[in-house]
Length: 160
Image 1 (tube, one colour):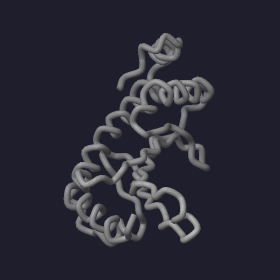
Image 2 (cartoon, one colour; image 1 turned 180 degrees about the vertical axis):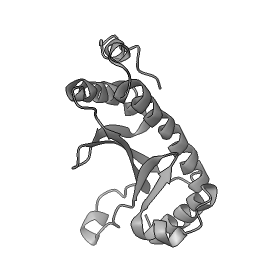
Image 3 (spheres, one colour; image 1 turned 135 degrees about the horizontal axis):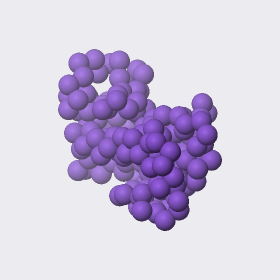
């Protein structure tokens, strides 16, 4: 993706989110949407060696931090993350995983066709913020009885 396209998208996102300091977002590549930290990643341009292969479509990568798995539930939460990857996120070019600090993150690949702009990406982030709230409220901080109901393996907890 060209740097100019990335800058234009970030500026549009800042306008949609009423963030006044576009330069701060461009330099840190981090913003907050509905209480969730979002890291913006722009893949490096292809080198001459890579150019011989078929060109990849432009894409922006979003890494949304959902928080830490609660102590005592880690293994079950990790199983639920894997199930969600297979059942929910596989269709969205998104994957749940862990960063190097053990924080649960959702990585989303956004193909940048002509219809995608900053406002559209902000709507997408609001959608995934709702997913993050679901994970936090129903899996991370749920009381034990509710958590056990979700974690039984009957897949009723999955919502697209």
